[in-house]
Image (cartoon, rainbow, N blue to C red):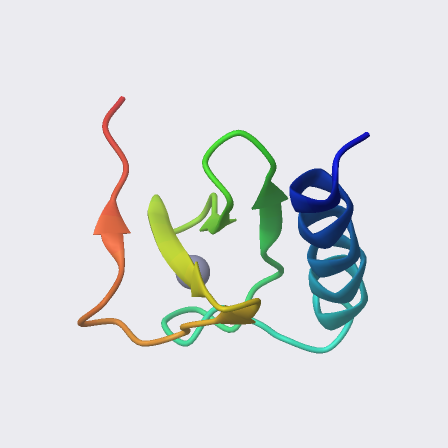
Length: 68
Ligand SMILES: [Zn+2]
């Protein structure tokens, strides 16, 4: 494992911990972390929230609509 991946994994651990506390700003439901996209997903609203520098950006105007 190179140092870039190690850094990314430690961010993932932080994000998984944060998921216990954060909710969707639209429906206040649980979010899930998408490892491939590195985003937080609300399945209810079909929204993807970006993660910038290891911090989830839970703003509706930053969220992306998920395609079916
Ligand atoms: Zn939602």
